Amino acid sequence: MALVALLPLGVFAQEPLVEGNKASAVRVVIFEDLQCPDCAVFREMLDRQLLPKYKSKVAFEHRDFPLAKHAWARRASIASQYFAAQKPETAIEFRRWIMRNQQLITAENFNQKLGEFAAKHAMDPGKAIAALEDDTLQAAVEKAFQDGVARGIAKTPTVLVNGEPFIETFAAADVMKAIDRELKANP
Image: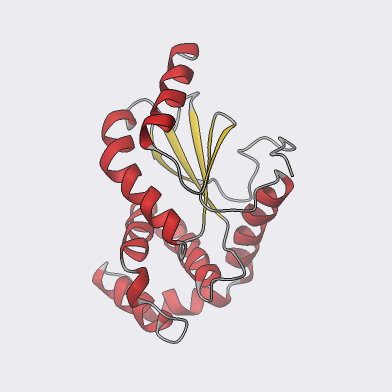
């Protein structure tokens, strides 16, 4: 299925989590599964190559797209939504942390790991764990997921540079070329 643009990318119950320049006309929209190994590779690319170069010029928007094949991905997305509602910086750090530690997390120990992360960031572990059952947070994750499905997204990560797709595995240089092209067109 081809990627389609049905709704403006900014149509969400809650504003998407953004790193970089929120006001930029150049948007890099990242549909990601927090349990996906390819997403962890992209996260590292984002932290080491893309954000250092483009943080002041580009908006990097995170969209949850938890795949059914991953046992704890949906819970991780809900937890990220919870942290974003409390303090967006903590949600960004949670996304980094969870992708760095995917091999240490299982469906059975997810809540424990979530509680440890919350405590380490001066948040109530019990509230973070209880948030996994919050209907509003679950609905926000489902809305982001359905938006991705409506656009034809099926794999993670899918990164859209002002609509141009990069899917699963790709080189940082290719994404940078697309960003540079968009920055030139949208000064």
